[in-house]
Image (cartoon, rainbow, N blue to C red; front, side, top):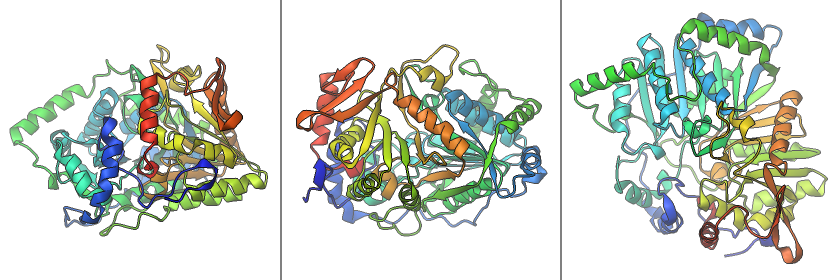
Length: 534
């Protein structure tokens, strides 16, 4: 294999792997084996005949639409935004919008966990459907093994329709691993998008999935993440993104994948779900469950919105045939345009940070004309996936030599209490999950797009680009706070290109706050030239 300059990544012919299909230490090895099966890719299946469906497009007929329209006067061509910077905000705003919904909720997620927060939000969707709200839920299949019965039960409601993106034919067990290997090229293409639209009036786009760790409710590890609440014309674009994926051949109705179950069992399950829907005892934050209170809460948000021009960019979903996997997605292309247009500074925050030769060359060119670049990503101690960190670590020296200033998040970051905003402090460790970029402190790029090869070439992604110096400055300040020595280690190269990590607790010559076994696993994965597979 031909090596690129500066000690960066080797060039490999095949992009990325199904990162979460296989857990544990065998992931990297099986990913490498999977290359042997690439000629076995099958078409998308099953193919289900259905009519195209589209988002609710009359928000003025709803209370939420009227709230948004009243404030939009005087902001022609602009949309209003609120940065969901804490787990509390992200959960409470979603829960509030569900209670305020009158006509429709469209939700698209890579992961929707069956934990406390995930179950609660799902049950409130059920209650919204009971009062006549149309629910469309589009879920990637990567995290759904063994959950078909529950999903099918919800789907049996007259006002709920659930589709599964790029599903496995094998629904449970180790057969999914075999299928992932045999049909690697298809299974490897995942829907990483995260969007949420209510009554065609309010939308949420960002990095969060649905689950306790994304909302500051997990007892052990919680994510530092970021979303944008939006109103105005950009919400139509978020709905168009949803419709594009919803109507693609890759979005298969759950009923086509598994039986709906026995009618009596379904009725009992739905009755129990309705009985549980009002239970908030296990939630760290207590959302309201009355429409009037929800609308009053929404009215309190409206003066906080920042109005600015914006654009939504999303990668294409899988269609009838698989696209080539060596061309950057639309979201990646637009990101490249914003980087090249920068004149002074780029701030980057990405959970996973894996760049290839073209990206490193572009960054070096920016540095040569005086653009400074700072990037925050996870340390080995804070990364939830050792394999992803190994992919990043293989190219870390190359990134430094390209001119990027690197910072790695500490799992004990002191600002965790501000990011989580829980009444009982910051439980456990903190990990970075945000995917945000700021260009010249005037343009903000927020969404599901990680700065890694998977997001560039394979995943479906959705990003929101907001042209607002005020919002860009606020996020830049937040990223810089996370880079502070209390929260992160600064990575640099010393004598003989040896890496060192500096923070408020001194300087280390190895990955800080980690044991020898974790460093050994990361180093072992790093020996494999498969960074495109993470």
